[in-house]
Every structure is written in structure tokens, then in C-alpha cells.
Image (tube, rainbow, N blue to C red; front, side, top):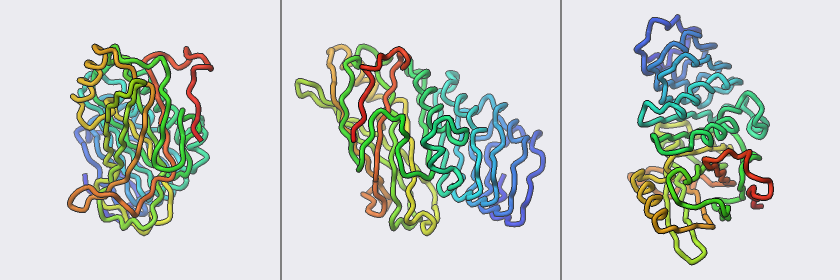
Length: 329
């Protein structure tokens, strides 16, 4: 359903009978005040584009969309948006559903400044607890094996890495010491890497796609190294650059197999398990890349801060305080 640029649209009619609806394009419906509660019945909905719906304050619940495992939600420039906790349920479904081979959640809240930085820092705040603290808790519980591939991309205004991240650093790189409990004897022991970056948009024109590429080098005590690379396409379509210039945005990124090639990470885990390789150090670097015919370094965007959070199959509550990770200043 395409209603984009319907600038006088105030309300959308009941959609409870539109059970096969997969896409809703409401870009630049600037007077739209609310979405119908019947949106929760749209089990096949995968794309919801609300970009520049500047008077929209709340998102309706999607809790009955039980088959939903993919949701691309673009709420860029919804400057009045105050509440997003209603999309907690589709996140749970996408992560925990084992009947589908792939789950993809992409939530863009750039320029939604009502979702303020205070909400990001406090994981108990309803505005963003699902996107951050609740998200990591679920990923930890889910990360028992590789039943399917999950990918999560979120973006909100913000200038700080959430306080509960195990490792934080200024700049675009971070070096961390891996705990002694980490070893490769099965895919179950391969950890979840949830990464976060604060990106400053200085002179970004907004007319090109942007991805954030994360490179990870694992190192062992005897000098062995293995390189991983994971890319997150954060914006696939034009976002007006003048509105982003001078602002900071926080990205939180996750992929089940922390590698662009899923088969590679499976091979890596299996071979390292058989060879009993152990890695005690990991080095991460983050680069925003812009598409100019090919992916090149984006000098218009700068990574100000970065963070890494690690979860294992074991419950975090079982880890003794002395074994918890230390922050990097």
C-alpha cells in the first residue's frame, strides 16, 4: 500500500481485513497523527516506511503478528515520535522463532530526538529498553546454536555507548581481552558479538547508501590470528543530509554469525574446535562506507565512540563478578 506524500492525510482506515498486506509506504505524510490499532493483525507486514511523518507520536502494537520475522521500519525524521516499546513483540518473534531460516530487523529512528539519550542510557526506560537492554537479553537466551541467521540494525539519536556494554572506547577501534571461559569446542560456545557505534554526521549529503563495516581480528597467545568482517547496510535509500549534518547517532548492530560469509564462520568454529585453538584477544575496527560506484571510506561521517558486548550460551547471572569484563577507557 503506497500513500507516500499524502500531505493532507490525517488518519488511515481500519486494516483488520487487509491480512495479506506486506508493505506500507507512508513517506512524507506530514499531518498523519496516528496509525490504526488494526495494524497488529497484519501478520505478513515486512516493510513499514514512516519517514518524515513528523506529527506521528506513537507506534501501535504488533503483538498479534505472530508470523512476523522480518520488519524494516524507517521512521527517519518522525520528530514527534515518543514511544516505540510496542514493537518489542516483533523483535522477540524474529529472534526466537525457529521455524524460519532467516530473521531481519531494521529499525531506523534517525532524527527522532524525542527518543532522547537519557532513554538510551537507562535500559529500564520503556522508550528504548527493547532496542537495547531487552534486545541483548534475548540474544543471549537465543544464542544456544545456529538454527537460523538473525540480523538486527537499529539507529537512534545519541552520543554515548549504553552503559551496560562490556567494552567501550573513544574513536573507531577497540582492543579487548577475551575471558578464559571462551574456547572453541562447538558452535554453542561461539559468543554473540553485539556492537555499537556513535557516528557523527558532519557533511553527509544524504544522497548515497551507507554501510558500517566492522573488522575483527582474533589473536591467540601463541600468535595465531583470524580475521572476521561483518557489514551492516544501515541506509539503503536517500536520507536528506541537511537534517543529519552536525548530529550524532547511535547504531546498535548484531548478526548471529559475525561474518559476511555465514559458511565461513561455521567452518571457522568447527576447525578451531578440532584443533583446540584458543583466542584471548580481539581487536575491532569500525568504518562508515559510502557507495560511490563502489564502497569507499566516508570522510563525511566519523565514528566517535564504539562498544562491544559479548554474551555466551551460559546465563550471565551464573558468571561470577570477578570474571566479568572490564571497561576500556
